[in-house]
Image 1 (spheres, rainbow, N blue to C red):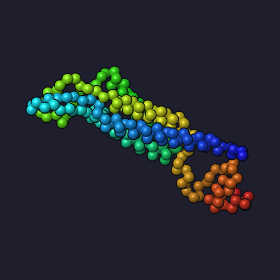
Image 2 (image 1 turned 60 degrees about the horizontal axis):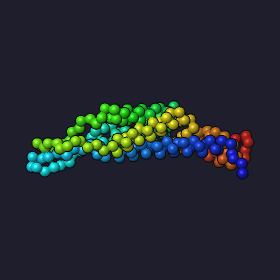
Image 3 (image 1 turned 90 degrees about the horizontal axis):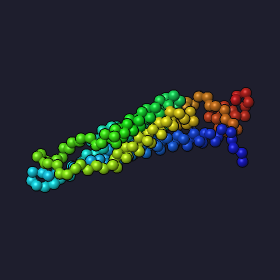
Image 4 (image 1 turned 120 degrees about the vertical axis):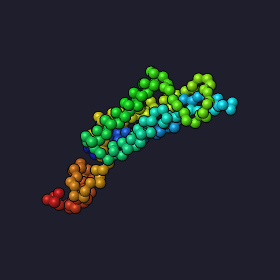
Length: 202
């Protein structure tokens, strides 16, 4: 059985498109998880002599995590619905979002944990011991940044190899390119209202 010319590149393009979609979805998931995790904690002694533990989540310390995760979900729809230079522009925006997160991670590891505030500590409480840090949230943020950078670069530089999902929903009268596959060309002619057996009509 021979391979129809042009069929293999099309399948690779579709695989590349879904790879990008999975990368962006994974980035949105890990960023959402990073926003929910506790990053830093501190024990306090209340005026009544009891001890309480207060902490700050990623959403408290890095408010951009949730908006970027939501923007990543919107980018998935944009990549699927667009093509050409518009799709490349979406890829550039994804790269910018990933670069912003990567810069935040760089700042965190180079300048240490910043001051944070909590609102669930009883008034008059005093801190006990040192602030405890949980690196899991920061590592997830770094992973999300890498995933967005990789996906954005793939879209920006390889958008031409990705099929536009909206192409098959084009207007009925829109002309379709001729296919090397005679059977596929016959169906294209039928869809366009042409007689596939009439050479003049074709």
